[in-house]
Length: 187
Ligand SMILES: Cc1cc2nc3c(=O)[nH]c(=O)nc-3n(C[C@H](O)[C@H](O)[C@H](O)COP(=O)(O)O)c2cc1C
Image (cartoon, rainbow, N blue to C red; front, side):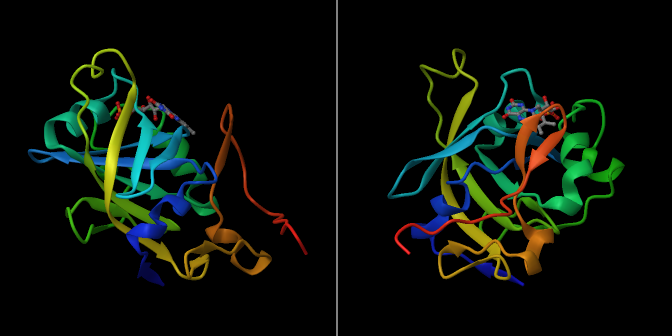
């Protein structure tokens, strides 16, 4: 069940390095690509950095619209994650081609991907002096949601009984790890 996540806890959704699907939309064009590299960079307001190659269509739509979303795929979406990370939205509407079910983001209205374990919408924070130099983009989180079967009370809970909602961690060459074993410090 999809539930709102307090913005104060939004960074915890990506703190452990999950693969994300970066969703963008501008002037009637929509797109999605996979990104293995993202991380929280500020506490309040919550800000996240994502590496989005300057050559991608995603980067073009992101810069033009000033917004983007991150959807966290889980094991049933592993093939889709690789597929949208292996072709460009310049040539095709990946939502249409892969029949991606989606729902509107609560603040920015971006098409968020059904079946993921968490979703964030972000306003792009332009860095004019760095736009041409770096592939990294920064965003401020304006909405956060998660499936409460795997993220509740501000914490991930990875268990055997919710394995289909675990996050994907890219190992390269189309291989992923999932967080199947959780250790608790101090007890
Ligand atoms: C699992 C996976 C992880 C990826 N991680 C990144 C990443 O962190 N940064 C990046 O710029 N590209 C990454 N890519 C490649 C982009 O997803 C790829 O260039 C995509 O085709 C760009 O699509 P677009 O032109 O429609 O935006 C990744 C691809 C895969 C399959």
